[in-house]
Image (cartoon, rainbow, N blue to C red):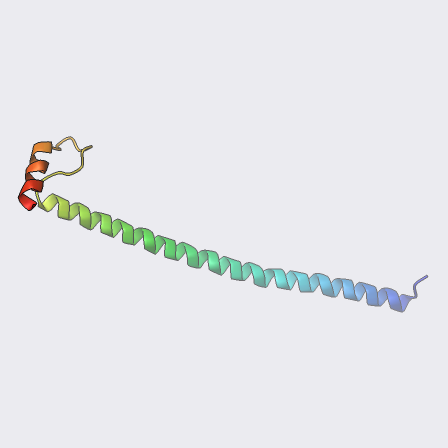
Length: 88
């Protein structure tokens, strides 16, 4: 049989380990949450940069007067070919 001193040491060690595990888990979770937030911010910045580039490209395309999107109902293949011929 184990003495009461041994039982106190066992349970003290057990509780110390449990509380250490809780504290360690919190620090790991906090670091992970910061990394996720950092990634989300950079992903958002990347998407905004892509949208700005697409908008610039769309604005530059409309300045030429020729629609290059074949899905557009105002698309005219003859005008596009004439534009390409004049550029080269």
